[in-house]
Image 1: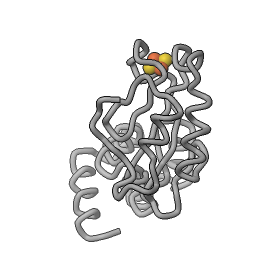
Image 2: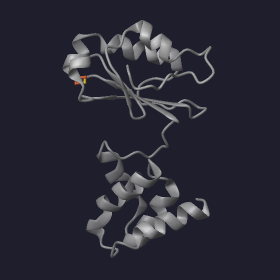
Image 3: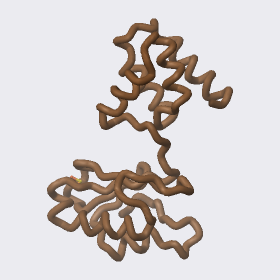
Length: 163
Ligand code: FES
């Protein structure tokens, strides 16, 4: 862990008393800062709370919101909710998997893409939807997917948030 990261982590921990029941709030805050739970952070948290690292891994694995691996620079989240499902989100997901070369739940080896699914993005009227980092793209079609993930373009993506 880099010095700055360790400093940030120690600052986060300074707001806690070292009680075991603070584990989840600490994990949420650490993940909020690092976007995942780095191994070094888990070691430090374990020693701060005086619990086994394994206990932290069990908790982190149990709750879906915790990540033990870093996200890619572009986190692509495909909605698999009912409205999106009936309008072809599965095909959208398959097309993205093909375009970026990773399966759902994976991150590309160059750390460019993480591909995930979610129960509802909250824009059902625009189904099928996906989100790239914080930008929602609605009324997706296979053609739009190809346009977004065009390997020929320099950035690979157009993140204008207009779907
Ligand atoms: S079901 Fe996809 S946005 Fe709600």
